[in-house]
Length: 504
Image (cartoon, rainbow, N blue to C red):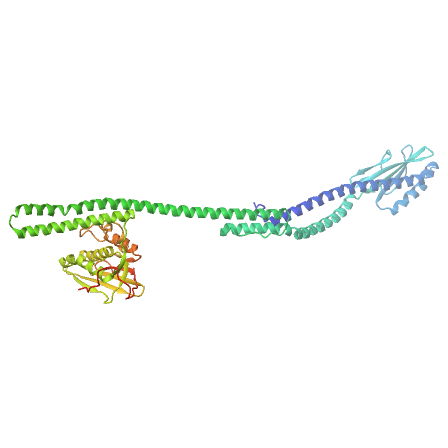
């Protein structure tokens, strides 16, 4: 496991050293075998030559049976200390002359001469050489010498060890210098791969420094990073799109469920609201049948019928407007209008409800004419709806204010009250279709809950905005309409027949 966790630099160094060591080991083994064989051959050849010289010199001594002369010849071997003992044998095998101690290393002399040749016994070499003259066999020469292979091998191995150490050191230096060209780009690839894993940054690239196989590896790695980066970006974009579409689908499903629930609530409320005027109408008709000549009672019945019919007409008008909004058919008949006329018409429409609930209405309208391009009927409907809402959701005896402000670019009309107020989270919901059915303002009074939706849509068609403000429940509310102002010169003709009138 430790070898598996080593760096490629260490592994490459180990491969170089192991290869070098194996090669040097094979060479050293071959040299040792060669040297052993060569040492054996040269040693044996030298001793055989020495034995031949002794035999030639001692041939006359054998012929004349002069052992002393033979011993003198053998005594010359003193100059060769490796020869431990020597002997000359007669043709019959009798010991004729000898040199050295008989017990040298416990070996002594050979009992009988052997055929020409040599033999290695432990750390000694024994040589036999025949003595002949004129094809006549005279005797044999025996030599026993120290072989000395172990000492020779020790010296040889010492030299080989020094050569091996030097070769490994040189190989280490050369591999350290050469492997940088191989390991540096590979280590760069590994470093970039690690950074990509840690940082998830597929824009990283490895610098190409060679044009060999490692360079091709760097090119392939960079190309792979580019492809993985493209696929990762595509996957992230796809995931983001799927998440967004999933969120939109959930929102759409929730909106559909909410719309379906509000539709059911709206239909139930519509049935209730349309049914409410029927009972007073039936009662009024019955009163008219029975009142006879009582004109006062008949007048009261007719007034009640008129109020209930107006309520039913208002409900039907709201339904028609809702249908026009949902089908995109609500259109404006725009013209150049004086805003004070529109405000006056709205006040006249809501005046009866304001007075019935004993509210105080405060008007703040500029004295100079303020012109807008608008559908006066629709715009008056918006302001009357705002005034009706203020009257309905303010306790009897409350205060309502309508203010008009204008600058060079736009006109602002605000309707405020000190009524029940609106919770902060409901300020935008009140403009949604059927908001009252969701009890955003509370089902305290009649109505379909579409007035503010109609108001926002009409104001949008006028290129304006409408916003709701409130300090919270019980702190009143304010609705502000912003419209583009129309700058009119005094010399320009006015399209409508109505003239600005003062509001009281």
